Length: 179
Image 1 (tube, helix red, strand yellow):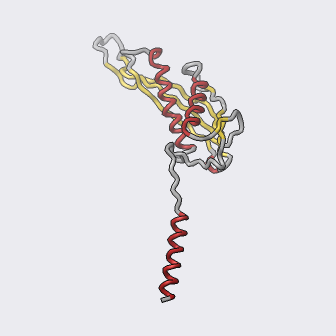
Image 2: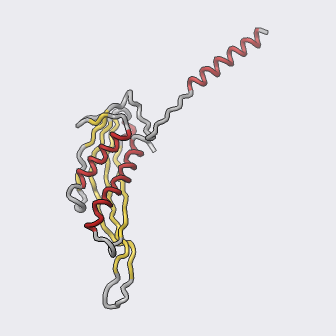
Image 3: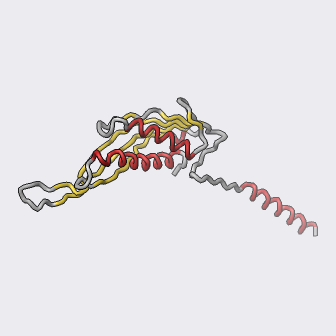
């Protein structure tokens, strides 16, 4: 009888410790941050080194990146030396034709039916709590527009914002969400 009782007690302890060892963490934003260790972040100004695009593109990217991290983490934004540090530059801004449309007049050249704006941003990421996550990576995204119905001036601001939204989501998931 004592053997059966000892086995039952031992099994109870094993199950109890096993359940306590299992820990489920969930975040609505998908971050894997330990807010006891990582409490702040800083973003250095991103400069436009691409040679193209709107004049305020670097400032726009910097501010949108700060806003995204503030909305989706509990980290405090500080000017310099955050537990997480983001810096870099816009390294690519190109506009290129994607699809040609034949001109019925053989004396005139074919035209582009779709144009593509592509932006590349190089991001240097430093995590003071976990230096293994530090790194530099280039993120790129594009959007197309129809030059036959709209001019670049009409759509550039909107397309740059949409491209930045996608790049910033990629930066976020590859840094604090560790995807």
